Image 1 (tube, rainbow, N blue to C red):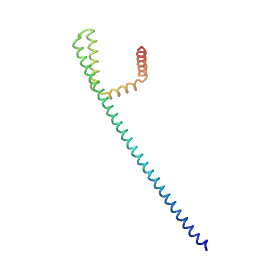
Image 2 (cartoon, rainbow, N blue to C red):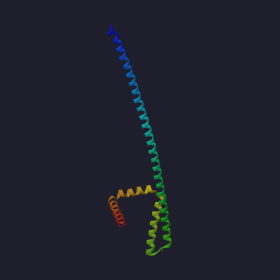
Image 3 (cartoon, rainbow, N blue to C red):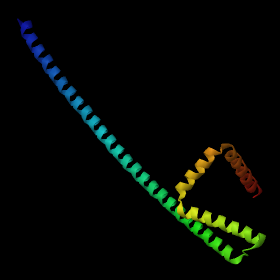
Image 4 (cartoon, rainbow, N blue to C red):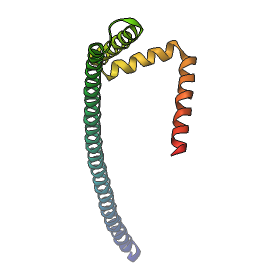
Length: 159
């Protein structure tokens, strides 16, 4: 009988130790869950911070690029106006007859039409026009590029 009294007590002790370890497992699982949630929250905050920083950089770059394009367009417009004024001055101060008159008239006409083009078209239009010219004439465009590269290489190697 003594053994039968022992068994229920041992079973009770085993049951209470399994409940204690179950409580430990619950605490461990809860701690792991809390750490996981904290990690997810931290990652989310980091992602939001990086997204905000990238967005701010993109906006600043866009504003900077927009400002550069606006200044370039203003400079191109001013250059066009200057070319038109030069054409007008050329017509006023050169002879209108003879070989010199014909040449100066042709130069003035070219300056005036180029100036009007620069005034009327922005940087984007000029890039599109240049792209069209290169597409229509690829081989001469490559040769011009090689020539410009050669001239730049010679100019920089002498310095």
